Amino acid sequence: MSPPTGARILVIDDEPQIHRFLRPALEAAGYVVERADTAAEGLRLAASRAPDAVLLDLGLPDLDGQELLARLRGFSAVPVIVLSARDRELEKITALDAGADDYVEKPFGVGELLARIRTALRHRRTRDQVPEIVRFEGLEVDLDQRQARVDGVVLPMSRREWSLLSLMSHNAGRVLTHRQLLTAVWGPAHVEDVQYLRVYIGQLRQKLGEAGRLIRTEPGVGYRMAESSEGKGAVPPEQAAES
Image (cartoon, one colour):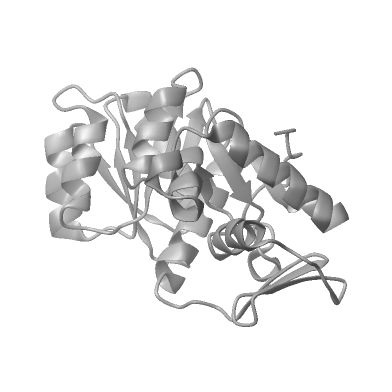
């Protein structure tokens, strides 16, 4: 019987136990799995097999995972989810800034990983399609009219508050680093002004009221807008941490 999704997932990791754990879980979810134990093999398969998504461990024996990511981005825009140890915060940030789409901390549960894969694949399908309205529970972000509405009521917003909300909404379900948000909204001269960003996120959450819970903190890394209602269930409803 053919897989229900047929999407091809390339797993680049030098730990045999990770492959033994991931292959049956991914195949049970309907994915076709490609395995690479080294960076060289991963790059070869990424170029020759055209995977739909890549799961990448950064600690590879023959090449640093960050360098692999840079080389991969030289010829492919495939979604990349980094498999990262919990205490390697700087690695996660560097990878996300370099073009990774998301990260999952080791050890991780199958449900969370599958949710991240679904979100990454959805972003790939819609990357060039800007929706007019992004809908969440209780919140509509109208990218065409440049309005945010909670239960039909238009919220007053400053230019930067709107820029933050629209950027995160367009990337709903995907983590955006402090650097990515600061560069996009304030410019490259402000990439270190993380406290400034926290103040604006706090103001934005306050204006959104109950819908403010949709903006989730990724501690030490950045922020993630909860998945839109069209993709409800793709991101686990973890409680937002305080910024």
